[in-house]
Length: 136
Image (cartoon, rainbow, N blue to C red; front, side):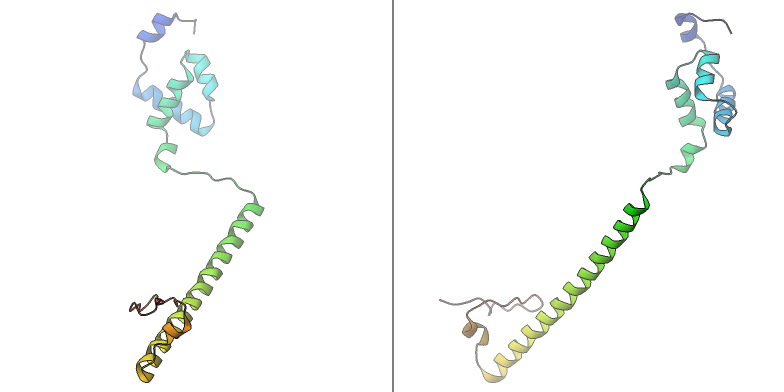
């Protein structure tokens, strides 16, 4: 194909079937983008538009994540550590709630304000009655 002028390149159009055929050639490895650009005097931008519009890769919407095996191993270790810490925090919260409830029951049974006598505010997340704030 002889070299076209810029004006001639602007006026020409490629049919949809031609574009689909060239996209298929690229995807099957029969042609390279650079070859098509050079052979038909079309810009890379236009060929990539054809690929986006008619290519099969567009439909897949896949994302390739590249990481080393050490990155994967480290990520897995960190996820396990997070899970273990969440389990420990959950156990500690249950212990705190249990102790707060025991103090509350003891206060009712013996008519003594234990929390005030301690002089500190205990953490009462499950049933905070407002009694655990220190008085002055």
